[in-house]
Image 1 (cartoon, rainbow, N blue to C red):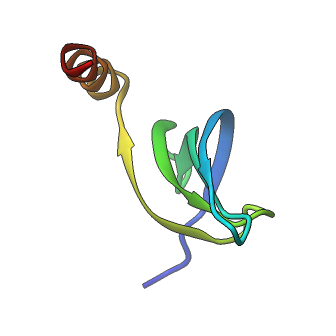
Image 2: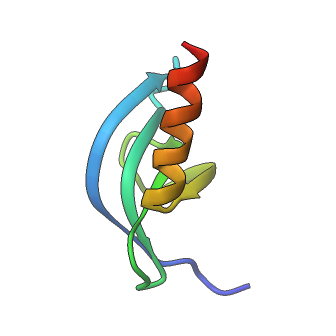
Length: 72
C-alpha cells in the first residue's frame, strides 16, 4: 500500500489527551488531495503519527449532532 498523504486544513478542537501526550482531535482533514472532511482520530504530539479514526461529510456530522442532541 502506498503512502497516505494528508493535510490538516483546520484544527477544530481536542476531545481528550492521553498520558503519553497523544490527543483525540476533531479536525478538517484533506486525504490524498481530496476535498477535506471532518475527522476524529488520535494524533501524536507532533502530528506525524496517527491512530485509526473516522471521517464525516458535513451532512453526516450534522446527522450525528442531531442524534447526540436527542440523547442528551
